[in-house]
Length: 325
Image 1 (cartoon, rainbow, N blue to C red):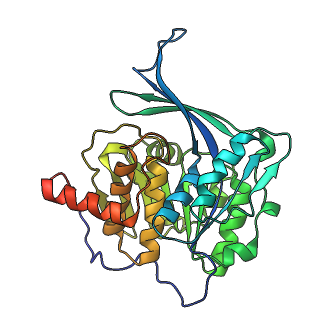
Image 2 (cartoon, helix red, strand yellow):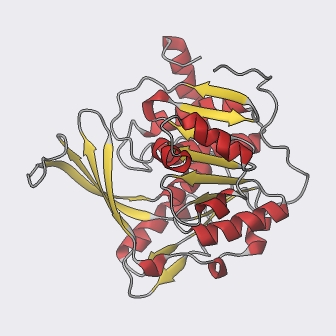
Image 3 (cartoon, helix red, strand yellow):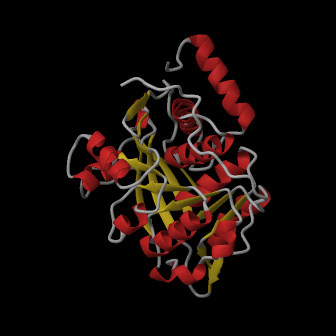
């Protein structure tokens, strides 16, 4: 499934206008308790934690931090509790220059948390998470003007009603919408109707299309109005569809330390590539490279790359022959 068109065709052609920010992200943030283990314990068994640390994470918060590392002007809209965990989650965003003024701080509520078990041998992670319902976002928490002042909107599927409202507002303002869809949920169809770039997990694709072949989900997403639909395939890379053009982008051969946040790094770099005016094949290759780089460090945000680091990684991969074609 090689490209059949000139990949120099940009995925998005921007209309000239002044903007306050490049990317606005609306969605979840989390304080992650990352635990390295020698495999998961058997049911009702026990396992020793080799290493444990608390690290900021969350799908959209991590992706927005990734965008900032790539030099984009960013804003994050979400909700945290009025606790130390909430302050820890927002701290790296603020340090990177991300506008967090629209984040809701909910009194008396604990910030979303995740317990992440990372297998020492493979780097693969298993995630257990909890979010208090009081942290849910509603349309009233989102500013239409803020969306219209951005060049791109990035969403997750955590609050589909608020996401659908924001995506529709972006579509009306001519702002492209990128969606990180990991788990199917009620209301997702309404959200997807206003998304230009759905980037979905393999499990979401199977659930959405009712078929094991992810190509069925991509066809359905394109038929629903997406400009480019992508399914991420872990170490195998990613598969995309633009119109009737299939684009397969293999993953990079690495010794993964922690796969947490790989998808978030992928989405951040995808957003940057769209705004740079890159074509689909180059966009997927860059996003795969960023995901691989992030897997070399612990935590969702441990290996988010700058442009220079991304270029150096690709140069090394090309030099030693480990880069996909």
